[in-house]
Image (cartoon, rainbow, N blue to C red; front, side, top):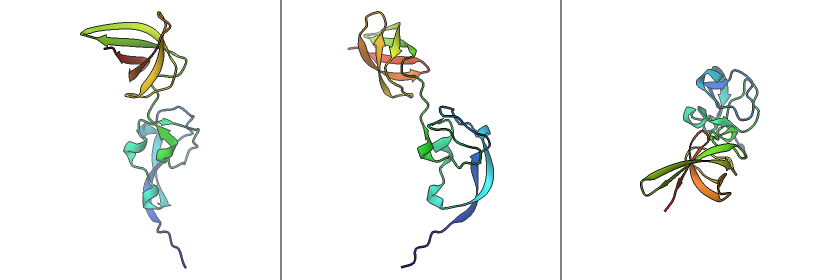
Length: 133
């Protein structure tokens, strides 16, 4: 049995510089280079642009979808603003994140004033929205 892999020569985006863990990737971080690659291996631009790196990557690397994640807007242990919405009222109070989270993700937070643990949705940098009944 003979196995063959079809490689195509194509211009692909590769990192133009070394990138540290936790950096958010922008178009300026890439340059086009001709490379031989199997088509399903190449990531789509929307899979990597605007995403946060999960590990350090060196210049010349073709970034894969597994190398990046949705940017963490809330980081464990850091202060956050809790916005609590209930029956037409919106109250803001300080809190502390108990987990990392990206936009739209649910995270646990500690309300500083009451020392209660709550769950809410990350709505922006250091901001968590809690919908109360």
